[in-house]
Structures are given as C-alpha cells and as structure tokens.
Amino acid sequence: MKKIVVLVSGGGTNLQALIDAQKRGEIVNGNITCVVSSNEKAYALERARANGIAARVIKRGDYGSQQEYDRALAGILLEEKADLVVLAGFMTIFGETVIREFENRIINIHPSLIPAFCGKGFYGLRVHEHALARGVKLTGATAHFVNEVCDGGPIILQKAVETQIGDTPEILQKRVMEQAEWKILPKAVSLFCQDKLSVQNGTVIISE
Image (cartoon, rainbow, N blue to C red; front, side, top):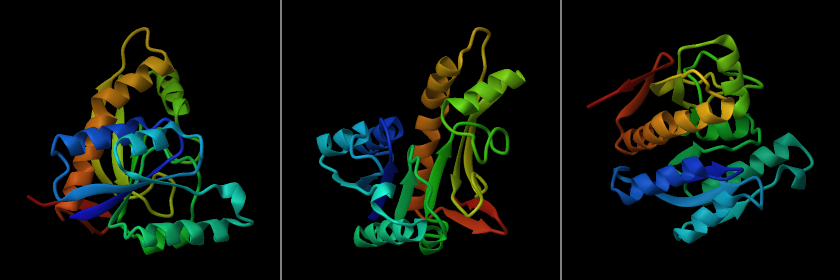
C-alpha cells in the first residue's frame, strides 16, 4: 500500500475529492496518510482531521531562505515516508530539493488543458479569466508530474470541459472542478499507486 501525502494551502476541495474517492475504493493500493499545509488556517486541515488523517503545517515565513524551506519540506515528506506527493491547491513555491528527491512522484492538478493557460501567474481564477477572455470553447484540467518548469512536467491525464454562454470565472471554475479535476486527479493517483505510470522521453506511458 503506497503512502500518499497531500500538500494544501486553502479549502481543500481537491483533497476532499481524493478522500471521497479513497472511501469509494477508487484509489487502488494507495492510502492518504498525511496532509501538509503551508497555511495553519487552511480549512483543508479540518477535512484531514475529520477523516482521521495526520495534519502538519510548514509555513514559508518560518524559514530564512527558500533553500531552508525546501530542505524542511523534503524532510517532512521523507519523515512521512511518502511514496507519492499530491499538490492539491498548494500555493507555496518549492524548489529543486523536493523535486529531485521525489522525481516523477509529485502529481499536480492544473485547471486548464496544458499547454494552454499555464505557467507562471496562471493559477486559481486567473486561469479561467484568461480562458474566457480568449473565448475558448473547450477548457478543462490536467493532471501532471511536477518538474522544475512551472506546469511543465509530463502530462498524465486530461479532461475537457465546455465553456458556456454567460460563464463567469467563478462558474467556470466550479464546472471544471466538478467535471474534470475531481475525476482525473483521483484516477491519476490510483494509476500511480498501481505502478501503471512510467515516464519515457518526457512522456507518460499508461500501462494496463
């Protein structure tokens, strides 16, 4: 059984989607063992505690440099014996120390069809604001491995979502979460835990 550590910063809706999927038996050979937040007031911590999951906090402001923070975060993940790290709305930047230690073992969910509307500055409602401003007919979500390039890691799964007349960024954000993020993130996690994902020449291969 693989140990999954989820990193959060806010409300934890994607964390809840993972917890719910786990309860339904949809995460095969994996178990969420710890939730780590960069914000001690994050509601995601309450979601963890309500479901009997260990909760920890590591704030960037408590460390003098990015390098110190990276080492501390990597230390926590190693202490928790994480087989897989999932970014579920983790809004604090970490660097190469963590990425190298957990190469192809960190999964992020991004609210667009990468490579559209991704990279530095594209997060939260901003992604949906840009999508609507561009007038796209299809948007969606992408589950991908994390590397040194922001939103640039190998793509695991994607799911498209149609935009609709009258959409606001908030309405579109909710639809993308419900129709795409909450579906493909647990699926990507389950595939990883079943050893069905491999990265070859920067591309994810999914085995049956």
